Length: 387
Ligand code: KIV
Ligand code: ZN
Image (cartoon, rainbow, N blue to C red; front, side, top):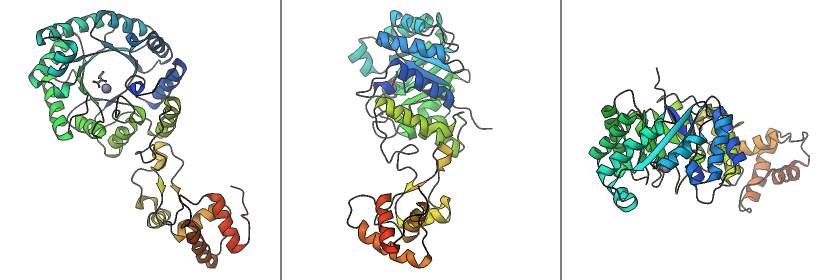
């Protein structure tokens, strides 16, 4: 049996911390509904104490999302916890998510707290949060730069005060998978099977997804991620990447409806105004687009020649071809035929020769209208089907 891996989506919280992004309440509710349909275990809806607008958005999401957990982030500050608790009041499955920095860097330069004071604050805050919800997740911020012995003490304190999930945050994205895995393994062993160990990875060195994967392999039972990998600075683990990896590589079962990934990615890109990089895995415009003649010919013979991830699996209608001077004869004929041209075997070479001559003169791809004109010039007929 495959391991069950919980997906906590933080598009609406860490994702909204993407520089320049602001979602209004309607957009947040719309994305939350998409996340519920996608099958995430928990939707982190926001950080209510950060603004009245965010508190209102968390409240609105808590009202409409009925089957999925809704989490709200809070600092370890009594009044913030109360604002988060109130925002979650209507949630059917509320989760209070508390966070505090545990590294010496954070304690000294940000919080101005001693280790002893930090431990007391953790205990007091978790107990306070438990007055609002039974499910409290505690995040050890900057865990990956914290003293491992002290990190254990912080986690144990949170658990003894009533937290059931401990989130290990690679806040500055400084980890390598071969170090992150053992760190998660240790924490898992230390806390035992009743506590869910979670991983929250940032992408500062492009390793967020690799680190999340290492965490799952080492025993993490929850991963935190965002649609399109958006988030603070270089972003977070991309939900679409880790969900597809875990499914296709048989590492774990997330319950994510993979066939909804591309549509939700597009919705998030449109609402956040953060375009998806074309070569991005799974959801990029080029992820299933084949360009070279050798690849196009291979795809026409059998898609698995050049596709490991099937486009249909993630909600794409199919693969695409882009026609450039690197394209081959078979692809040019295939695209022309799919545009309604009737092309005999003997015309193929002439059309292809004319196509290459033209393609060498244009800076980008040859579009459909240009291809129609080329075919028309060579065989003197218009396509028989409208496309
Ligand atoms: O990056 C981080 O440490 C966070 C925490 C709130 C989990 O986003
Ligand atoms: Zn983060």
